[in-house]
Image (cartoon, rainbow, N blue to C red; front, top):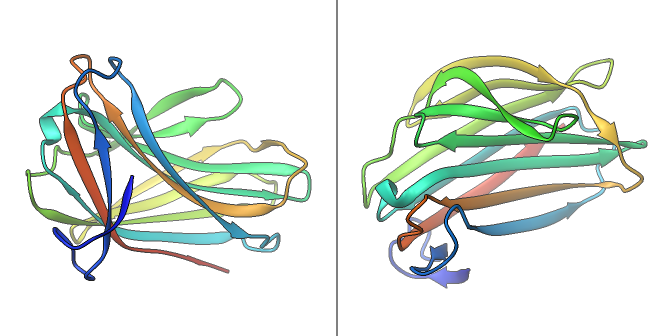
Length: 182
C-alpha cells in the first residue's frame, strides 16, 4: 500500500493498493486501521471513495468494519463479488461469504466511485447489514449474521483487494475514508 498518492486523488492524498502480476491466484492486499475502543456504539456508517484501474482483474473488493466489545466480535464484513456481480456478507460462524440479493456491478475503469455502507447491532447481538449506497443508488440489504466471542475491545475499518484466477496486475485507490458511529 502506498499512502499520500497525489494522483488519482480527490483530497490531494489518496491511498493506493497494488496487486502485482505474478502473485498467487485469488491473492489479496489488505489495509487495516484500528480506531480505538468504542464499546457502546451500535450503528456504523462506512463512507469512502474508491478507484480501480483494471476492474476486470479483480475477483472482489472487500469493505469491512469490525467491533470487539463486551466479549463479542461483530464483523460487518462485505465483499463486492465482481465475478458474481453481487454483494456478499461474512458469516463468522461458518467462516464463509453469504450472497445477498443486492447487485454489485463491475465499476468502470479509472473512475471514482462513492460507497456508503450502513450497519447496526441489534439488541441480541446480531450484526445487521442495513443498506449499501453506490454512486447515489441506495439498496436495502437487511441481512443479519451472528456475533462471535472475542476478548478484545475496539473498532476497526479495513479494505481488501482480491485477485482473480489469473492474478493480473491492478491497483485500487481509496480516498475520503470515514466511519461515523454512535
